[in-house]
Length: 562
Ligand code: GLU
Image 1 (cartoon, rainbow, N blue to C red):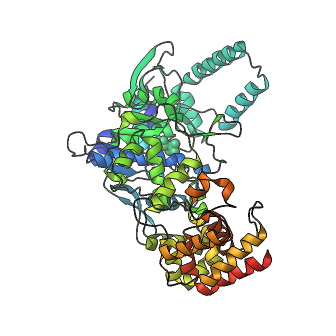
Image 2 (tube, rainbow, N blue to C red):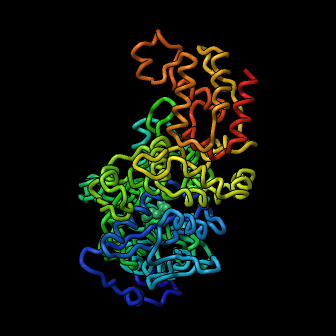
C-alpha cells in the first residue's frame, strides 16, 4: 500500500509537516530538575474533589522545582461540554489556591484567553495540529482509516451484548471475534478508500497496534512504582469520525508539544498507558514521566471502602462552598491526604504556610486515600481557630450573604457585636475550635441573638428545682457587670456554700456525701439559663457580650419557668 497516497487522500488539506509544528513549540528553557506539569480537565461543569488532587500535586511539583504549571482544557468530547464550564473551573481552582503560570486563563471580563506561548490550550482549537500528526502516522503505515459507521459499530456491540454469557469461554470468544474484527478493519485498498471518500463517508482513524499482549512492557510510575503492563494490541481510535482527536491521541501530541515532563492523572488511565507508550513511540516523542494518582475512597454505611462517586456528598466542589468550608481548609485537608508526613510537619511548623511544605512524590499513597468529613472537620476547626475574628467575620458574612440571608442581615447590622462573639477564646495557645464550616457559626452564635436564642428548662433532674431557683435568684441579686472574672466566680462559690454545694470540685470529690453538688453545678444552672445549653463559650464573656439586661431577663425567665 502506498501510505503517502493514503495520507494525502485522508488529509488533503494538511500541508504543514510535524517539523513546521515543532518550530512553534521550541523546547522550554528551564533549570535542571524543573518540572513541567499540567492539569488537564474536561469541562463538564462538575469540578470533582478528585480533580483537586492532580492539580495540587502538579502545582506543588512545578512550583517547588522552578518549573511551569499550566492548564489545558480537554474539550474534545462535545457531548459532555457545558457552556461556561471552563470559566467556572478556572474560578473554582483559583479559589483553592491553584494558579497556573500558563494555559487557559480568564481576562478581566471573565473571558478565556491563552496565557503563554505553548497554546492554544483548549484542545478544540488544535484540530489542525492533530491532523498534521495523524497524517504523518498514516504516511508511515502506523494508523489507518476505518469507515465502519458508528451505527454499524453499535450494532456489533449490541449483538455482542445479546449473546452475553458471563463465562470464560465467552470472554475468549469475544476476544477472538474482536481480533478478527480488527484484522478485517485493517484490510482495505486505496480504491475502496477513494470510493468511500467520494461518497462522503466519514472515517475514524485508528492506530495500527503491533503489540503482543503476552509480552510485558516495564515502566516505572512515580507513584505506583515499577509496573509490568501487557503490550498494546488494540487499534485505538485516534481521531473520531468528526476529525476530533480522542483523549489518547491529544494527550500524546499536546504533552509532547507543550513540554510536559510529568503527567499527573487519575489511575483510571493506567490501563491505557500501554497505548500511550505505543503512541509516543510511533510519533517519535520522548515519553514523559507518569504519576497515576489512586482513586479516592470513602467508607459506606457498613464500613466498606467505596470509590467516592459523583453522587456522593463531597464529590462536587460546589458541595464545599454550599456547606461553608473555607477553601484553605479543604486545600490543607487534601495535602494531609496526599502526603503522609504533612500533618506531622504542620504540627512542628504551626506558623508556616502549607506552601513551605516540601511536597514529596515518595510520600504519596499507592493505594488510595480515604475521604472522610470528620478528618476534614478537624483540619478545618484547627485552621479557623487560628484565624483572626476579623477574618472569620469577613468570610462568614460572605458565605451567609449567599446561603443564609437572614443570618447575614443580623451579622451585617452590628459587625462589632459579631466580632466580639467571634473573639471569645481566640488567640492564645489553646484557641476554641467551634467552627469547622461557616454553617456551624449560626448554631454556635445563636445564643447571642434574641431571634435565634431558645431558652431551655432542661436542667438535670437530680438537682432540686428549689436549689436551681435559689441559685439563679442569688446570682442575679449579686451580679455586677463590673466584677472581674475572679470576683464573679467567687460569688458563684458563695452561692454554692449557702446552698450546701461544695465551693470546689476537689472538696466534693473527697466527700461527695457531704454536699448536694459543687460549684460547677451552680454555674451550670446559670449557664443553662443564660445560654440555653450546658455547653457554651466562656460564661463570663457571654454575659458581658449580651449585656446585663439580657442576662438578667434570661435568668429571671428561667427561674420563673421552673
Ligand atoms: N481530561 C482527562 C481527564 O479529565 C485528563 C487526564 C490527564 O490529566 O491526562 O481525566
